[in-house]
Image (cartoon, rainbow, N blue to C red; front, side, top):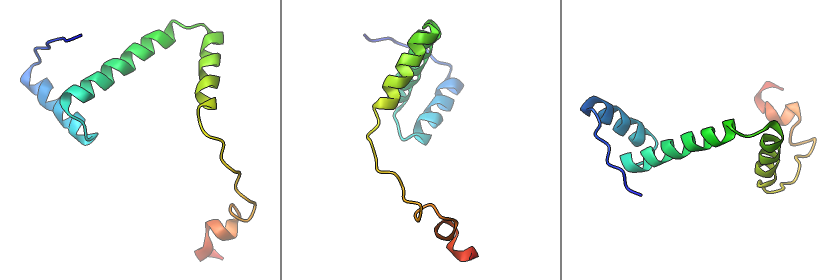
Length: 83
């Protein structure tokens, strides 16, 4: 679907700067904003159970990584210059 937007020049400049900060073109940035807002609208209409299931699905999408050893997270190793 294509949509034509007639933006105020100041708004267009502001949005272009925001897009550049993220390393995106203006159209890529606007697609990202629209997608984010559509997702928010969808989530706000979900029940608590549906939100919980969506969260668990999202959490399960991350790879299983090995746990850090006690030595790796010891204070001596986290702050070697203080001990």
